[in-house]
Image 1 (tube, rainbow, N blue to C red):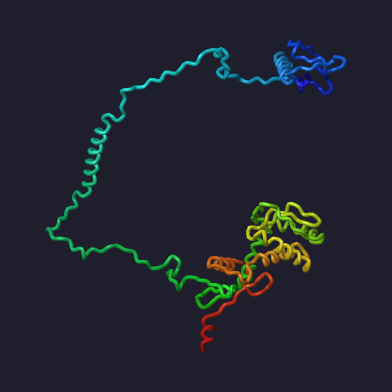
Image 2 (image 1 turned 90 degrees about the horizontal axis):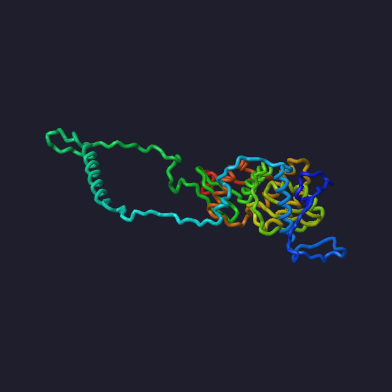
Length: 350
């Protein structure tokens, strides 16, 4: 029973003890060992628990084992003397003559009438002394002037008419046309979205603020050894844009998370184009590495020419473009938009 002495004896030290057990001989099997040096009890687990607790109790009773003394609340002791005592049924006293609605309606009605009289007297007293002291002639209402405040401006600086609203429409599923105060603005939708995504990706890679969407099932893509080595080199930067890789082997990559702005069907094409860009243009330093990554992803993720955009999507691109630091050029130094002044349009009709 060395388990009961756990924590009290050093290693390789064994206690000496004598155990006196009184059990039913029918619960002992003496035929499990040829030399009769061992016996078997029917319920070994119960017997082991009894012996262990008895030894623990003896060690604690004679202060052999260290104990902690706490202040004991006698009210929490188990009342063993109540074991055979019957529980008494609590007595509930009810006043059967009590009626909560008796005389209440009369009292409420009288209180309401008295309160109404008091309130009527109070608001009628507000008009005391306001009788006209004139000779009885009626007041000419045409001579009464009302104070008013003249509206001299608009909260947004212009009236909300159809002519002043900034409207957009799509031309040939490629250009977004927006009106200006003195002309017209023509925006290439693919180039504009590329500029927007480029600056967003640069910010995500720098501050690691990208948001990922978890895939229900991992996406496994096949690559050659050269491509997987290149993918391992840009893995950290890709994860800052929203990609999450669970494993990259010598011939495949397992993806469990992708950026929220792309769909699962676009991942393979996007990564293949990214690897082609890195193979064709080797970055010289960390900045060009990040810049090339943002350029390649932005170009692949941007809305393409030929995609139909609704009014909300068109306005979103226009607002996002002019919130960029460099809205007039793409990351590849190509123009994003042109303006057509009214004067130039008028010359076309001369």
